[in-house]
Length: 58
Image (cartoon, rainbow, N blue to C red; front, side, top):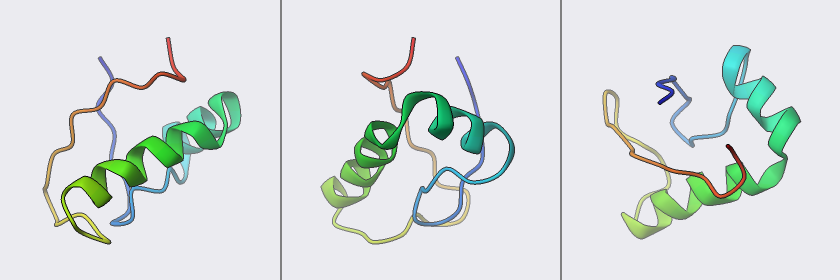
C-alpha cells in the first residue's frame, strides 16, 4: 500500500508522485483522471481520499 498526496487535479507531482510517473508513464495519470471523471469533477476536494489500484504499477 502506498499513501501519497497529490495536487487537486491528481497529477503526480514532486517526490513519490514524480518518480511513479517517470517509472510507469502516463497510464497512471490517465487512471487517476478517470477517477475524477467518474465522480463528475475536475479537481479533488482537500482531504478527499481516492482508493486506486493501478494496472501500471506492481
